[in-house]
Amino acid sequence: MAGLLTPLATWRGRITALLLVLLGLLPWYAPWLDAAGIISQKFALTLMTRVLILAIAAVSLNLILGYGGMVSFGHAVYIGLGGYTVGILAHHGVQDGFLQFPLAIGLSALLALAIGALSLRTRGVYFIMLTLAFAQLLYYVGVGLEAYGGDDGLTINRRSDFAGLLPTRGPDKVVAFYLVSFVVLVLVLWLVHRLVNARFGMALRGTKSNETRMQALGFATLRYRLAAFVIAGAICGLAGALLANHTEFISPAMMHWTRSGDLIVMVVLGGMGSLFGPLYGAIAFLLLEEFLPSLLRLVLTWLHGGVGAVLGAGATGTLDAWLRLAEYWQIALGTIMILVVLYARGGIDSLFGRPRHG
Image 1 (cartoon, helix red, strand yellow):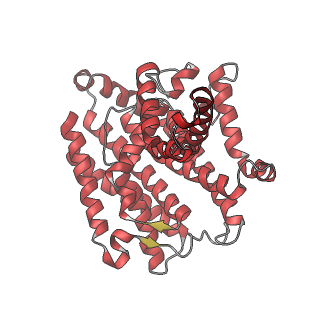
Image 2 (cartoon, helix red, strand yellow):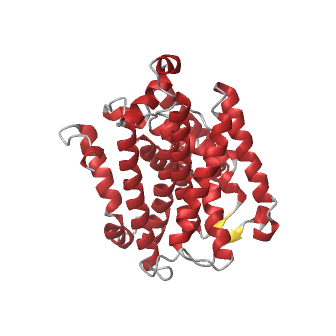
Image 3 (spheres, helix red, strand yellow):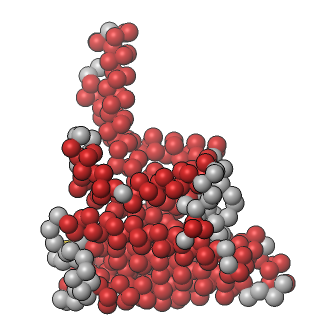
Protein backbone atom coordinates (compact mmCIF):
# COMPACT_ATOMS: atom_id res chain seq x y z
CA MET A 1 0.00 0.00 0.00
CA ALA A 2 2.93 2.32 0.59
CA GLY A 3 3.73 2.14 -3.12
CA LEU A 4 0.62 4.20 -3.81
CA LEU A 5 2.34 7.36 -2.65
CA THR A 6 5.28 9.03 -4.23
CA PRO A 7 8.03 9.64 -1.62
CA LEU A 8 6.94 12.43 0.69
CA ALA A 9 10.10 14.37 -0.18
CA THR A 10 8.39 15.39 -3.44
CA TRP A 11 5.58 17.92 -3.80
CA ARG A 12 3.50 15.34 -5.61
CA GLY A 13 3.80 12.87 -2.75
CA ARG A 14 2.94 15.51 -0.15
CA ILE A 15 -0.11 16.74 -2.03
CA THR A 16 -1.36 13.21 -2.66
CA ALA A 17 -0.87 12.22 0.99
CA LEU A 18 -2.56 15.41 2.19
CA LEU A 19 -5.51 14.82 -0.14
CA LEU A 20 -6.02 11.26 1.08
CA VAL A 21 -5.75 12.37 4.72
CA LEU A 22 -8.29 15.15 4.19
CA LEU A 23 -10.68 12.74 2.48
CA GLY A 24 -10.25 10.07 5.13
CA LEU A 25 -10.78 12.46 8.05
CA LEU A 26 -13.72 14.37 6.55
CA PRO A 27 -16.35 12.79 8.85
CA TRP A 28 -14.40 14.09 11.86
CA TYR A 29 -13.86 17.71 10.78
CA ALA A 30 -17.11 18.14 8.82
CA PRO A 31 -19.01 19.01 12.06
CA TRP A 32 -16.55 21.89 12.62
CA LEU A 33 -17.25 23.19 9.11
CA ASP A 34 -20.97 22.93 9.85
CA ALA A 35 -20.64 24.76 13.18
CA ALA A 36 -18.63 27.53 11.46
CA GLY A 37 -21.42 27.97 8.92
CA ILE A 38 -19.15 27.03 5.98
CA ILE A 39 -21.02 23.97 4.73
CA SER A 40 -23.59 21.54 6.12
CA GLN A 41 -22.07 18.33 7.47
CA LYS A 42 -24.65 16.13 5.74
CA PHE A 43 -24.29 17.98 2.45
CA ALA A 44 -20.49 17.76 2.57
CA LEU A 45 -20.51 14.02 3.26
CA THR A 46 -23.21 13.36 0.65
CA LEU A 47 -21.39 15.35 -2.04
CA MET A 48 -17.98 13.84 -1.30
CA THR A 49 -19.41 10.31 -1.21
CA ARG A 50 -20.63 10.89 -4.76
CA VAL A 51 -17.17 12.21 -5.66
CA LEU A 52 -15.49 9.08 -4.25
CA ILE A 53 -17.86 6.71 -6.06
CA LEU A 54 -17.48 8.40 -9.43
CA ALA A 55 -13.72 8.55 -8.83
CA ILE A 56 -13.79 4.74 -8.59
CA ALA A 57 -15.58 4.61 -11.95
CA ALA A 58 -13.07 7.09 -13.43
CA VAL A 59 -10.12 5.03 -12.13
CA SER A 60 -11.57 1.97 -13.87
CA LEU A 61 -11.94 3.91 -17.13
CA ASN A 62 -8.37 5.19 -16.80
CA LEU A 63 -7.13 1.59 -16.74
CA ILE A 64 -8.29 1.08 -20.33
CA LEU A 65 -8.15 4.68 -21.58
CA GLY A 66 -5.00 6.03 -19.93
CA TYR A 67 -2.94 2.84 -19.85
CA GLY A 68 -4.50 0.86 -22.70
CA GLY A 69 -5.48 3.57 -25.18
CA MET A 70 -9.06 2.25 -25.46
CA VAL A 71 -11.52 5.15 -25.72
CA SER A 72 -14.77 3.64 -24.45
CA PHE A 73 -17.78 5.91 -24.88
CA GLY A 74 -20.03 3.40 -23.14
CA HIS A 75 -18.24 2.84 -19.85
CA ALA A 76 -21.18 4.13 -17.81
CA VAL A 77 -23.20 1.08 -18.87
CA TYR A 78 -21.42 -0.83 -16.08
CA ILE A 79 -22.49 1.81 -13.55
CA GLY A 80 -26.05 1.21 -14.69
CA LEU A 81 -25.76 -2.57 -14.60
CA GLY A 82 -24.26 -2.55 -11.11
CA GLY A 83 -26.94 -0.15 -9.92
CA TYR A 84 -29.80 -2.10 -11.48
CA THR A 85 -28.51 -5.35 -10.00
CA VAL A 86 -28.76 -3.84 -6.51
CA GLY A 87 -32.08 -2.11 -7.25
CA ILE A 88 -33.84 -5.09 -8.79
CA LEU A 89 -32.73 -7.44 -6.02
CA ALA A 90 -33.86 -4.91 -3.39
CA HIS A 91 -37.18 -4.52 -5.19
CA HIS A 92 -37.73 -8.27 -4.77
CA GLY A 93 -36.79 -8.19 -1.09
CA VAL A 94 -33.16 -9.33 -1.40
CA GLN A 95 -31.22 -6.87 0.78
CA ASP A 96 -28.11 -8.98 1.41
CA GLY A 97 -25.10 -6.91 0.33
CA PHE A 98 -22.91 -10.00 0.30
CA LEU A 99 -25.12 -11.25 -2.55
CA GLN A 100 -25.87 -7.95 -4.28
CA PHE A 101 -22.33 -6.67 -4.67
CA PRO A 102 -20.62 -9.86 -5.95
CA LEU A 103 -23.50 -10.32 -8.39
CA ALA A 104 -23.19 -6.70 -9.59
CA ILE A 105 -19.44 -7.11 -10.09
CA GLY A 106 -19.82 -10.50 -11.79
CA LEU A 107 -22.55 -9.39 -14.19
CA SER A 108 -20.58 -6.27 -15.09
CA ALA A 109 -17.51 -8.39 -15.79
CA LEU A 110 -19.54 -10.74 -18.01
CA LEU A 111 -21.04 -7.83 -19.92
CA ALA A 112 -17.58 -6.29 -20.35
CA LEU A 113 -16.33 -9.66 -21.63
CA ALA A 114 -19.10 -9.82 -24.23
CA ILE A 115 -18.73 -6.18 -25.34
CA GLY A 116 -14.93 -6.36 -25.32
CA ALA A 117 -14.79 -9.61 -27.29
CA LEU A 118 -16.60 -7.87 -30.15
CA SER A 119 -15.44 -4.26 -29.83
CA LEU A 120 -11.72 -4.90 -29.33
CA ARG A 121 -11.45 -6.43 -32.79
CA THR A 122 -11.89 -2.91 -34.14
CA ARG A 123 -9.79 0.23 -33.76
CA GLY A 124 -10.20 3.97 -33.54
CA VAL A 125 -13.59 5.51 -34.24
CA TYR A 126 -15.11 2.07 -34.92
CA PHE A 127 -14.25 0.96 -31.39
CA ILE A 128 -15.72 4.18 -29.98
CA MET A 129 -18.95 3.76 -31.96
CA LEU A 130 -19.35 0.10 -30.97
CA THR A 131 -18.97 0.81 -27.26
CA LEU A 132 -21.40 3.72 -27.62
CA ALA A 133 -23.88 1.50 -29.47
CA PHE A 134 -23.79 -1.22 -26.81
CA ALA A 135 -24.25 1.38 -24.06
CA GLN A 136 -27.26 2.94 -25.77
CA LEU A 137 -28.71 -0.51 -26.39
CA LEU A 138 -28.60 -1.24 -22.66
CA TYR A 139 -29.91 2.27 -21.93
CA TYR A 140 -33.04 1.63 -23.97
CA VAL A 141 -33.45 -1.79 -22.37
CA GLY A 142 -33.54 0.06 -19.04
CA VAL A 143 -36.10 2.51 -20.41
CA GLY A 144 -38.27 -0.44 -21.41
CA LEU A 145 -38.21 -2.09 -17.97
CA GLU A 146 -41.64 -0.83 -16.94
CA ALA A 147 -41.76 -3.24 -14.01
CA TYR A 148 -38.82 -1.36 -12.51
CA GLY A 149 -39.94 2.18 -13.28
CA GLY A 150 -38.86 2.45 -16.89
CA ASP A 151 -37.61 5.92 -17.76
CA ASP A 152 -38.77 7.26 -14.37
CA GLY A 153 -36.44 4.96 -12.46
CA LEU A 154 -36.91 2.96 -9.27
CA THR A 155 -36.58 4.01 -5.64
CA ILE A 156 -34.58 1.71 -3.35
CA ASN A 157 -36.31 1.64 0.01
CA ARG A 158 -33.38 0.27 1.95
CA ARG A 159 -29.63 0.10 1.44
CA SER A 160 -27.71 -3.16 1.17
CA ASP A 161 -27.43 -5.02 4.45
CA PHE A 162 -24.02 -6.45 5.30
CA ALA A 163 -25.11 -8.68 8.18
CA GLY A 164 -25.73 -5.63 10.35
CA LEU A 165 -22.10 -4.47 10.11
CA LEU A 166 -23.14 -1.11 8.63
CA PRO A 167 -26.08 1.07 9.70
CA THR A 168 -28.72 1.28 6.97
CA ARG A 169 -30.94 3.84 8.67
CA GLY A 170 -30.48 6.95 10.78
CA PRO A 171 -27.83 9.68 10.66
CA ASP A 172 -24.92 7.25 11.16
CA LYS A 173 -25.52 5.65 7.77
CA VAL A 174 -24.18 8.74 5.96
CA VAL A 175 -20.85 8.65 7.81
CA ALA A 176 -20.55 4.87 7.58
CA PHE A 177 -21.23 4.79 3.86
CA TYR A 178 -18.75 7.60 3.22
CA LEU A 179 -16.02 5.64 5.02
CA VAL A 180 -16.90 2.48 3.08
CA SER A 181 -16.67 4.40 -0.21
CA PHE A 182 -13.30 5.85 0.82
CA VAL A 183 -11.90 2.42 1.75
CA VAL A 184 -13.14 0.94 -1.54
CA LEU A 185 -11.51 3.78 -3.48
CA VAL A 186 -8.16 3.21 -1.73
CA LEU A 187 -8.36 -0.53 -2.42
CA VAL A 188 -9.19 0.08 -6.08
CA LEU A 189 -6.25 2.50 -6.38
CA TRP A 190 -3.98 -0.12 -4.80
CA LEU A 191 -5.26 -2.80 -7.19
CA VAL A 192 -4.75 -0.62 -10.28
CA HIS A 193 -1.30 0.38 -9.00
CA ARG A 194 -0.30 -3.27 -8.69
CA LEU A 195 -1.75 -4.12 -12.11
CA VAL A 196 -0.09 -1.35 -14.10
CA ASN A 197 3.30 -1.92 -12.49
CA ALA A 198 3.20 -5.68 -13.01
CA ARG A 199 4.04 -7.56 -16.21
CA PHE A 200 0.38 -7.26 -17.19
CA GLY A 201 0.50 -3.45 -17.00
CA MET A 202 3.79 -3.24 -18.88
CA ALA A 203 2.32 -5.35 -21.69
CA LEU A 204 -0.85 -3.26 -21.73
CA ARG A 205 1.12 -0.01 -22.02
CA GLY A 206 3.34 -1.54 -24.66
CA THR A 207 0.25 -2.49 -26.64
CA LYS A 208 -0.94 1.09 -26.45
CA SER A 209 2.40 2.38 -27.75
CA ASN A 210 3.01 -0.15 -30.52
CA GLU A 211 0.73 -3.17 -30.78
CA THR A 212 2.45 -4.57 -33.86
CA ARG A 213 5.82 -4.68 -32.11
CA MET A 214 4.27 -6.32 -29.03
CA GLN A 215 2.74 -9.01 -31.24
CA ALA A 216 6.11 -9.56 -32.90
CA LEU A 217 7.59 -10.10 -29.43
CA GLY A 218 5.06 -12.89 -28.84
CA PHE A 219 2.45 -11.10 -26.69
CA ALA A 220 -1.19 -12.00 -27.22
CA THR A 221 -2.23 -8.34 -27.23
CA LEU A 222 -5.96 -8.99 -27.65
CA ARG A 223 -5.99 -11.07 -24.45
CA TYR A 224 -4.26 -8.35 -22.47
CA ARG A 225 -6.61 -5.67 -23.76
CA LEU A 226 -9.66 -7.87 -23.14
CA ALA A 227 -8.52 -8.70 -19.61
CA ALA A 228 -8.08 -4.99 -18.84
CA PHE A 229 -11.50 -4.28 -20.35
CA VAL A 230 -13.15 -6.90 -18.14
CA ILE A 231 -11.36 -5.71 -14.97
CA ALA A 232 -12.38 -2.12 -15.73
CA GLY A 233 -15.99 -3.18 -16.27
CA ALA A 234 -16.06 -5.11 -12.99
CA ILE A 235 -14.66 -2.17 -11.00
CA CYS A 236 -17.15 0.19 -12.64
CA GLY A 237 -19.96 -2.22 -11.77
CA LEU A 238 -18.83 -2.01 -8.15
CA ALA A 239 -19.06 1.79 -8.42
CA GLY A 240 -22.59 1.39 -9.79
CA ALA A 241 -23.63 -0.75 -6.83
CA LEU A 242 -22.23 1.87 -4.46
CA LEU A 243 -23.96 4.68 -6.35
CA ALA A 244 -27.33 2.91 -6.18
CA ASN A 245 -26.94 2.60 -2.42
CA HIS A 246 -25.82 6.22 -2.13
CA THR A 247 -28.70 7.76 -4.08
CA GLU A 248 -31.19 5.02 -3.10
CA PHE A 249 -32.47 5.35 -6.65
CA ILE A 250 -31.72 3.84 -10.05
CA SER A 251 -32.70 4.98 -13.54
CA PRO A 252 -31.56 4.44 -17.14
CA ALA A 253 -29.82 7.84 -16.96
CA MET A 254 -27.07 6.09 -14.99
CA MET A 255 -25.89 4.39 -18.18
CA HIS A 256 -26.56 7.13 -20.73
CA TRP A 257 -23.69 8.08 -23.04
CA THR A 258 -23.49 11.52 -21.43
CA ARG A 259 -22.47 9.87 -18.13
CA SER A 260 -19.71 8.08 -20.04
CA GLY A 261 -18.67 11.47 -21.39
CA ASP A 262 -18.50 12.81 -17.83
CA LEU A 263 -16.16 9.97 -16.87
CA ILE A 264 -13.90 10.71 -19.85
CA VAL A 265 -13.81 14.38 -18.86
CA MET A 266 -12.79 13.41 -15.31
CA VAL A 267 -9.95 11.24 -16.60
CA VAL A 268 -8.70 13.85 -19.08
CA LEU A 269 -9.08 16.71 -16.59
CA GLY A 270 -7.20 14.83 -13.87
CA GLY A 271 -4.58 13.24 -16.10
CA MET A 272 -4.73 10.13 -18.28
CA GLY A 273 -2.30 7.37 -17.49
CA SER A 274 -1.68 8.52 -13.91
CA LEU A 275 -2.86 6.69 -10.84
CA PHE A 276 -4.40 9.61 -8.97
CA GLY A 277 -5.39 11.66 -12.02
CA PRO A 278 -8.98 10.33 -12.12
CA LEU A 279 -9.40 11.19 -8.43
CA TYR A 280 -8.20 14.76 -9.01
CA GLY A 281 -10.43 14.99 -12.06
CA ALA A 282 -13.52 13.69 -10.25
CA ILE A 283 -13.00 16.14 -7.39
CA ALA A 284 -12.44 19.10 -9.73
CA PHE A 285 -15.29 18.24 -12.13
CA LEU A 286 -17.96 17.55 -9.51
CA LEU A 287 -17.02 20.46 -7.26
CA LEU A 288 -17.04 22.81 -10.24
CA GLU A 289 -20.38 21.39 -11.31
CA GLU A 290 -21.76 22.02 -7.82
CA PHE A 291 -20.25 25.38 -6.93
CA LEU A 292 -19.39 27.11 -10.22
CA PRO A 293 -22.90 28.62 -10.70
CA SER A 294 -22.78 30.16 -7.20
CA LEU A 295 -19.25 31.42 -7.79
CA LEU A 296 -20.30 33.02 -11.06
CA ARG A 297 -23.18 34.77 -9.31
CA LEU A 298 -20.76 36.28 -6.80
CA VAL A 299 -18.42 37.42 -9.58
CA LEU A 300 -21.28 38.86 -11.63
CA THR A 301 -22.64 40.70 -8.60
CA TRP A 302 -19.20 42.23 -7.98
CA LEU A 303 -18.80 43.15 -11.65
CA HIS A 304 -22.26 44.70 -11.79
CA GLY A 305 -21.42 46.92 -8.82
CA GLY A 306 -17.99 47.86 -10.20
CA VAL A 307 -19.22 48.66 -13.71
CA GLY A 308 -22.18 50.56 -12.27
CA ALA A 309 -19.86 52.69 -10.16
CA VAL A 310 -17.81 53.62 -13.24
CA LEU A 311 -20.49 54.02 -15.91
CA GLY A 312 -23.50 54.77 -13.76
CA ALA A 313 -26.31 52.50 -12.60
CA GLY A 314 -28.43 53.14 -15.68
CA ALA A 315 -25.75 51.83 -18.05
CA THR A 316 -25.46 48.36 -16.51
CA GLY A 317 -29.05 47.15 -16.45
CA THR A 318 -30.62 45.22 -13.60
CA LEU A 319 -28.68 42.84 -11.38
CA ASP A 320 -31.15 40.04 -12.18
CA ALA A 321 -30.26 40.30 -15.87
CA TRP A 322 -26.58 39.87 -15.01
CA LEU A 323 -27.24 36.96 -12.66
CA ARG A 324 -29.14 35.12 -15.37
CA LEU A 325 -25.79 34.73 -17.12
CA ALA A 326 -24.81 32.29 -14.37
CA GLU A 327 -27.32 29.83 -15.86
CA TYR A 328 -24.77 29.29 -18.63
CA TRP A 329 -22.06 28.07 -16.25
CA GLN A 330 -21.27 25.18 -18.60
CA ILE A 331 -19.58 27.71 -20.88
CA ALA A 332 -17.16 28.57 -18.07
CA LEU A 333 -16.59 24.87 -17.39
CA GLY A 334 -15.89 24.27 -21.07
CA THR A 335 -13.42 27.15 -21.09
CA ILE A 336 -11.59 25.61 -18.12
CA MET A 337 -11.42 22.28 -19.98
CA ILE A 338 -9.98 23.96 -23.08
CA LEU A 339 -7.31 25.68 -20.98
CA VAL A 340 -6.38 22.37 -19.33
CA VAL A 341 -6.06 20.63 -22.69
CA LEU A 342 -3.96 23.47 -24.15
CA TYR A 343 -1.68 24.29 -21.24
CA ALA A 344 -1.72 21.21 -18.98
CA ARG A 345 -1.55 18.32 -21.41
CA GLY A 346 -1.18 15.82 -18.59
CA GLY A 347 -4.16 17.21 -16.66
CA ILE A 348 -4.17 18.39 -13.08
CA ASP A 349 -1.80 15.62 -12.02
CA SER A 350 0.91 16.93 -14.37
CA LEU A 351 1.00 20.20 -12.42
CA PHE A 352 2.62 18.24 -9.58
CA GLY A 353 5.41 16.91 -11.80
CA ARG A 354 4.00 13.42 -12.10
CA PRO A 355 5.82 10.51 -13.71
CA ARG A 356 4.30 9.15 -16.91
CA HIS A 357 3.06 5.91 -15.36
CA GLY A 358 1.18 4.57 -12.35
